[in-house]
Image (tube, rainbow, N blue to C red):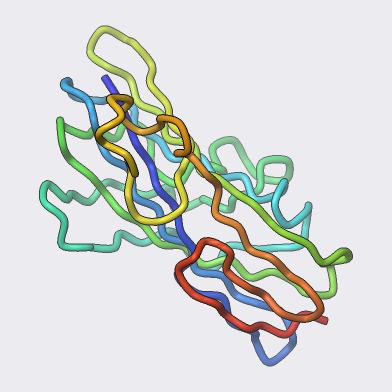
Length: 193
């Protein structure tokens, strides 16, 4: 059994009040040779932005990317990416008991508002999502996200979901009032005060 997960920043924009909004996208995929049960994506943004400095706007939404074997899993409507202040399960993006057949994948987007006045020290914010699943033999598999859209950025390495150089976090840097996507995908200028 094997599972893979990717995560990327789709956009980061400054709001009229100076706060900024970040749209994240994550894809989970069954990279193994058996069905995976109890599939879950876990996201805790307290370590990224700080306790109380962010809020998730609405529930995660399924995002069709036109991939082969793409399916929609049920989401957790209580997801808030905030473990200490949330109820149990609030860091879980998916509802309980989700299943991925061999080769199936599923993609979700969620939006986070970050209160700029609570960003005390400009710097680089890194973050990863963890994916877990259970095989029919009750073997638990997990992976931490790789920056971008590929759940296994080096399929030739023989290590589904995470060989050397994989599982790099997405990075967002806030420097002198600008937010720059360091993942190599695009540069976004955002004013932070």
